[in-house]
Image 1: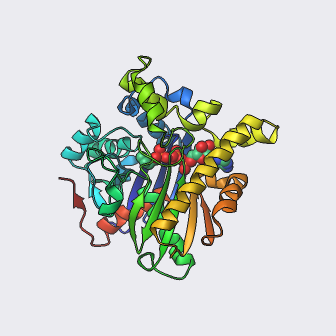
Image 2: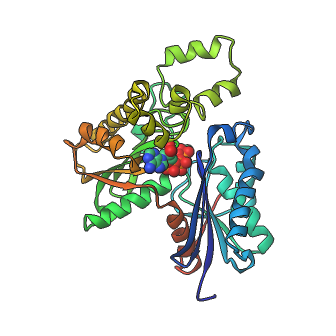
Image 3: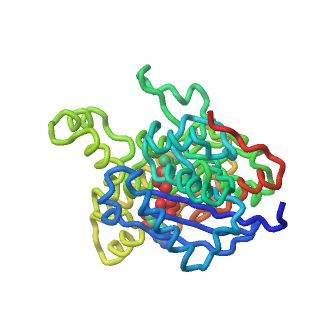
Length: 358
Ligand SMILES: Nc1ncnc2c1ncn2[C@@H]1O[C@H](COP(=O)(O)OP(=O)(O)O)[C@@H](O)[C@H]1O
Ligand SMILES: CCCC(=O)OP(=O)(O)O
């Protein structure tokens, strides 16, 4: 085993592609390419973005003069798979097939596993995914929806929520398994999870379920009106899905998925932008209240993270609503690339056995 393990980490998000190179835990470089809705519009399905995202990554590696032959592993953020426990998984044929077919749904992170596999395959090195978006630790009571045919699902930013909950635990002088926290990821999608002693016992489905609207998703909707929309003859299934996921939320109201652009408009006096942005913060605040109730008020902290957490105005609106319940800790951005590298290193040099996706 070489002394320095070189790991390429790939994180395709709904609004960005992020990659980093690590030498063991040391980050050599990190780069984020943001994607506007217009740029992604030509690709009706996530899998159609495969070549575009791959070329985005290869261009960065080329620009940074990275010799991929020296890599020891590639790790990607995954993906809509069947519900599984947290941890590091080797990317195998079964996983690749499920992701390619979008058997459990479509999300940009599906491409993480696929691209890691593609790059590693030519180099004869392993590909992994870590804490995919389908990590499921929900308690049975949280899965009951009210309609027996429909089960509430755990689809969320598991990788970053867990990484930030661990960071918060460290800052509180405790272990993740010792604390209760509500963690909010404010990204292209928004997820709000109740972490009880190291397990996410309830969380909104940030993709096509419930919870707040987000930069590009509608979030939970009043179902009577939604049913009418399904049957008004205007939309096919795929069109309506794209309208609610990808072109919902801020994109639908304001034509942009970029929090910085919205902030600029508000600073220039745009009252509609302010109302919609505030409404998104309001819905996040309400969801935090629900998850605080799930934890029965026994909460060490409320943790706010993700790209929108860089915006102090947005964060202050949320704080106004929730800081009476617990201290609010803010960690802007995400630690997903490092969390991916850690997951790979735990297997390569830490003695952990990679899990197999069956
Ligand atoms: N400084 C900032 N101020 C406001 N919004 C920001 C800032 N930086 C990033 N964002 C917003 O955060 C969102 C993306 O968050 P991120 O966690 O990177 O998402 P994802 O990984 O889901 O694509 C976008 O709406 C982006 O415009
Ligand atoms: C599918 C849940 C995770 C999620 O929404 O990620 P993005 O914000 O990167 O789209």
